[in-house]
Length: 196
Image 1: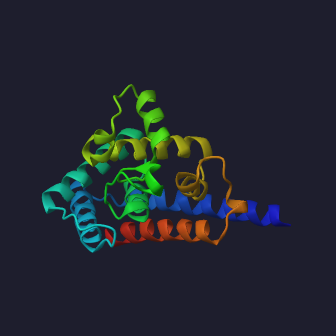
Image 2: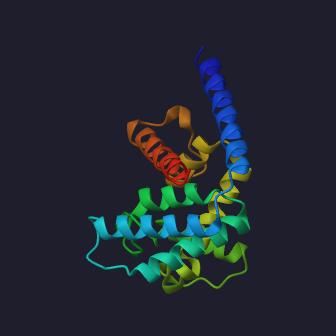
């Protein structure tokens, strides 16, 4: 019975995604409008973040937005999914001490994973390059999302796997991860609706 419910929910989610993609393609949003919105969102959230006293200029927020759009296009990932995950993970604050030092950067990636992904792309990894969102800090999380999308295809599994790892499953998730999933989906949908 639970398998049937999960299968039905997955089919429903796929239908919703197809519908949103069709709508998204029918009503194009200019790149400039996306960039401006994303930059404003980054600036606002970073300014309100509780985990930093570091300020972020509007120019730098705009550079983050450009990087999100660039790498999202390069790796075929929805930029609003990237934006939602980065906000949920770090409020766009790039630090080296997330998870007691095990995670780093604006995407709060595990250090070993960031090193592996950089090597896979033939890029030189360093802690400083990972901490800089315009170097590896945005590129690697977007690339990782593209790999998760290729592996799972289902946005729910992609979101949970980004946070918990690719070997976890939605069916055994506890309330924290379901909260994370719905928080990211809610933000992603909010961003898309705000630009309509």
